[in-house]
Amino acid sequence: MPEPSTPPPLLGPAAGTTVAVIGAGAMGAGIAQVAAQAGHPVVLVDAQPDAADKALATLRQIFDKLVAKGKVTREDADDTLERIRPHTTTDMTTIPPVDLVVEAVVEHLDVKRALFRQLESAQPASTVLATNTSSLSIDDIVGQASTGHDAALHGGTSPPMARPERVIGLHFFNPPPLMKLVEVITGDGSGEGVLDAAAELMRRWGKTPVRCTSTPGFIVNRVARPFYGEAQRMLAEGLADPATIDGALRGAGFRMGPFELTDLIGQDVNLAVGESVWRQTGEDPRYAPTDWQRDLVREGRLGRKSGRGVFEYADGRPVDARPDEHQVQALVGGPLQTDPVARTLAMLVNEGVDLVHRGEATADDVDTAMKLGTNYPRGPFEWLAQIGADTVRAQIDQLDRLYPGGRYRPSEAL
Image (cartoon, rainbow, N blue to C red):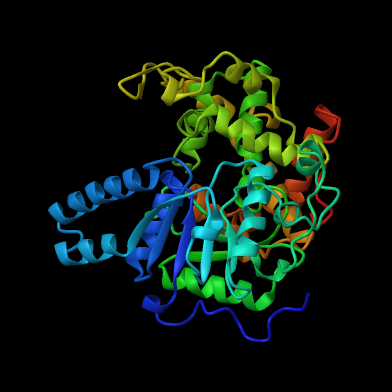
């Protein structure tokens, strides 16, 4: 159907723009907090009894601490909390009409599809419907695509939604009140006016929006795959131990190494995103998860939350994750095969360049997303300018010769 001739009412006064957040978990509650702090009336919805009320109680505790620290006034805190109305239901027709819905429920395609079809029939035609999915295809959710690999696993696509122009992705990063980045995702049918209005709204919320097509993993979760994958492959090959690989990458400016970071994220969560990207790209070997990480998850070694992942934890701290500094110095700047920094940077640059080459995002947005979404010290294109395209191409070619099979194919744009 054609895009509405008038833009969605997202750019009016905050008090007049209403928001519903579906899902009262940590992510949904955080998004509700951000919207309410920006002045919007918010309906926080969850299917589980008392979940939304408990989320609001947790937010009240958070604001009490902020008030005690002088971060916000008591009046502002109370006003923000009064804007959030908890709502328990599985029936989307009971949600009042709003201008924007942000869905933040479980990361299962069939669940999201069913939810969006309820929202489409229950909300006015002018309501923008946004998903906070971190890796699922917008087109598969809408039902336009028939070739999505995640869609195939869930029994094919549903009948397409009648107004795909109002469905977009708004991918927040955890925790939403602190993380500045929001990926604004366009599906094949998303309206340009809707996307522009949503990006401007995110700016009003104090966020930095970046634009991306509905490519598997979007910007951050796709470009970041080599950061984890190279480290896991080097470990599986016996080239270095986890603490030393982490130490080498911290020495290159990364805030956390790949093993400590995946332990923090949760090995199961990190693996699930990797599996989703891999399936949606037709099991492209570039994104193939490692058997090493699958074994880790199978053994219940999920990271900090389970007390044991790559490292052992006591009181939330790794018991022994000290790098061998002498080995770090020997590896970095040595042969490419055993240099964690050179291998990782070459693959990050290759991935970022390839994403832009396919027309899925701009170079500036890729750099911004990777610095804000993952706290990388530089973006892929900043590293490209520093290292040089010829050097990166030669490194990827060398890795492709060492490990044939398609993972290390260079982007045509190099």
